[in-house]
Image 1 (tube, rainbow, N blue to C red):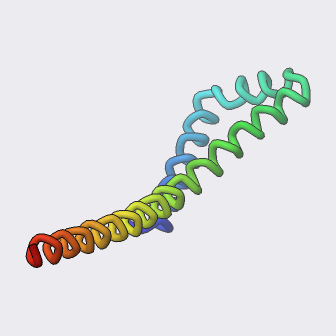
Image 2: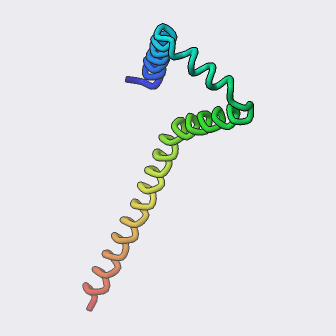
Image 3: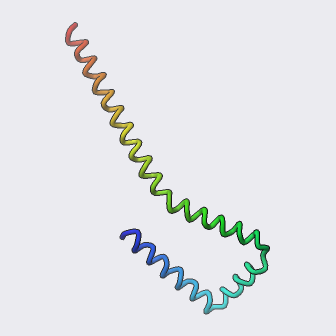
Length: 95
């Protein structure tokens, strides 16, 4: 399943959850509670949610970059090992 389909399913699930909460009367309680909070507290809560969303959005990118870097460093290490093996083979072959 591609990322666009996952986002669409998540959005549908979120809309259904909001609809159910509204039908059960839970949504008005949540809105009243948030409305009673000071403005700066609401801004902090929104900032935390946006930061978490950004973290989730970019977490996979960092993992892919780390994986590429590890593969490059591993290839360099293997080349050095092979060069050392050849050097030792030549050294023991001439003795």
